[in-house]
Amino acid sequence: MAIKSSQQAILVTDDDKSIRNALSEILVTEGYKVDEAFDGEEAFNPLTNRKYVCALCDIKMPIMDGIELLEAAQKENIDVPIIMISEHGSTETAVEVVKKGAFDYISKPPDLNRLLITIRNAIDRNTLKEQTARLKRKVNGLQEIIGESQGIVFIKKAIDRVAPSEARVLVTGGNGIGKELVARWIHEKSNRNARPLVEVNCAAIPSELIDSELFGHEKGSFTSANNKRIGKFEQADGGTLFLDEIGDMSLNAQAKVLRSLQEGKITRVGGEKDTEVNIRVIAATNKDLNKEIEMGNLRMDLYHRLNVIQMHVPPLNKRRDDIPMLAIHFTHEICNDYNMKELLIEDEALEALKNHNWIGNIRELRNVIERLIILCDDKITVRDIENYVLNTIK
Image (tube, rainbow, N blue to C red; front, side):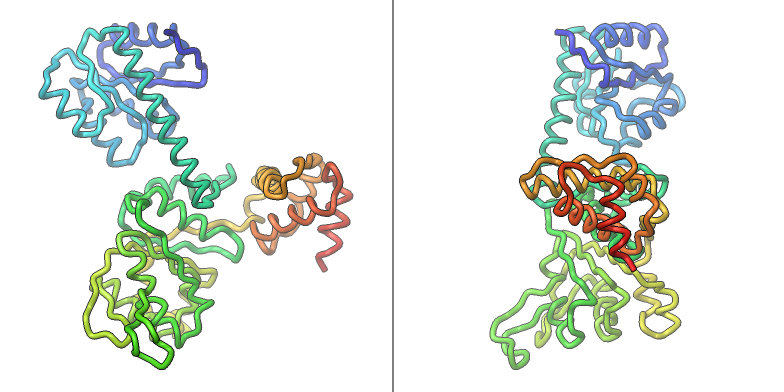
């Protein structure tokens, strides 16, 4: 029943060297890569920073025992199945560790067949979770955050850390940089992902309608209010409200948003009864909000209410090494959408794209790739970049 997969790594944590060696020998024979740790403290960083298909962990260990490691992993939202192993086994212990989030519990000395079956089940469960998540993202149109530059790696790690909390997040960065995608991933990785992410573009709504848009209205509350309307706050109840371009919201609306965040309730336009709402707010802006406060365009108290966690998405010109990866990704995506054969991008063309000044950031790059796909033949050359990109920018 050997499972040959050199890509699958398992972390074995036990203060008994002979047991670590025995488990490692078995797992290596089965085709796994094995890392070892003496106790929970030594295991925590590898568990956080590396991709394991599962971890085997003793319960009784010095400094940080298996239960403490399990609890720390749960707190940090580390999605690695942990199989607890102990020679001091009992039904009560097994129930306790599973309740705390362990995938399973095995008594020492472990039965080899049961151990390998449990590991295989843990891997199968994670594979199913990943497939389900990918399908859900595809249905919801949720794209990956593409890039391996330092700034993007930082953003991805920040999303993983912040998403499970209830903290409000302010996402900053220029136009076309992907602030909405960051907000979507925070919601996707949060405990609210079963409920909706409701988006509001504060710059696109006329100031006289924003109250109705955010808080809803009662029938007859104004001339054209022929029916009751449920506002964005109520639509997001239990989920996440994304306030895009928060710097463009009117001062009157800001005051009402602040009250709603402070009290956890809203009042519909023309209504008298308060309605409780349970939402998490993510806001985004391309403006310098400190300057907006100085100019009197933004309430300082609302700014501090929203700015619990701030994530700044770097401009594309600051992450040029990501451009080839993004260009290839967009080529694959757009060719699929057009149901056409994928075009090859020559290395010299990718280098030319890297050196271009991307004022419009990710949005501009995607538009350029779409233009090239439409106008080029079976591959994209540096001459195509000169003709269809560089010469069109004045």
